[in-house]
Image (cartoon, rainbow, N blue to C red; front, side):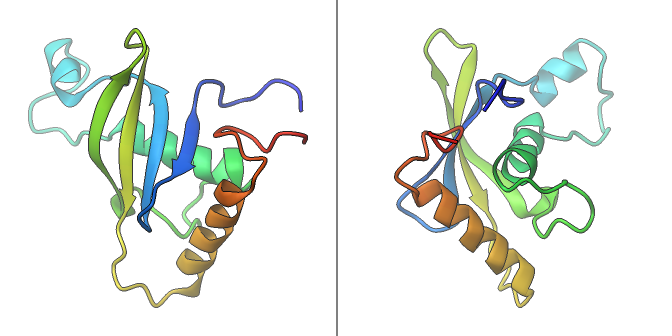
Length: 131
């Protein structure tokens, strides 16, 4: 594999279903965006962590476009907690995909496909080694 388009992003399963350890570069928080004028009070804040997570799952791991047809949406993901890694350039997040008593087969299939990849012995958090 050549250069990775998602350099510095890592994803691992946790011991609990629907929970993932996700490492990404520190995004701007809502408070930072308001302080610098990039976001007005009361404007909708979109978490870059959730966006990075969804893009990495869809395009980086599953090789699918993140379109309206993608079975998991922004509102299906929450950041449970976080911690700094190393010198603070990266943070590790505990991400949860919310199980809304899905009856839609695509969500379950997507999570099964993701689980298979993340459980593969050659998965190193960013790519399957050897590919």
